[in-house]
Image (cartoon, rainbow, N blue to C red; front, side):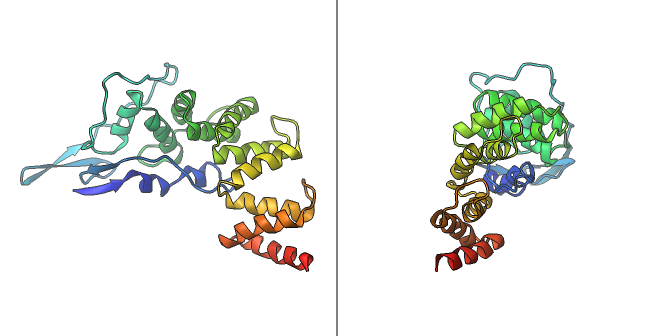
Length: 257
């Protein structure tokens, strides 16, 4: 028997790197418990029984009815910590209304890990989790709709979910919302709002936005020139190895002399 740390597992294909490729966002995901699992692969489940081993063919899990209401948490339902972690179990937990796993299933269906890629069904599960207040699902849902990946591109919905998640402090949603204001997509172009949301995201460790803010303050592109703020943000990004930030930091320090 081996131990699978679900947090580390999902970080290995984090949606922060996939869903937000357009924004070059850093990765962040949900926190889960460690669940002991038995050996398994995509097609079979290996069940240890006494001293022997039995190979059981896994049944393909049923796809959700995309027109059905979102499952609510079933009273008295609890996750068995000994249950195998696979598509079937995650679907079971999602169908029993466990919001965290509705969000996880939505992610899996986007990236095609443990489940066949299906952005339309991903939209269903992410919306279910988002409607229950799951902020990461809100951000993922906003980006899925923004990209028009398997669902109609609707900027009103993008702004709605990005704003809800950003207001709740979700770093990637703040990045997306800042981009929307920067480009004037779904909202009027507004440099002040761009800087506001970029700053909130950068303060949470978004290295790309630390570099972007430093550049803006250095050049006056979309922000009033401020050498001190430029050096502050560029230094933070450079300390994390951001190459462009290192170059701009050198320029900023030259101007300071």
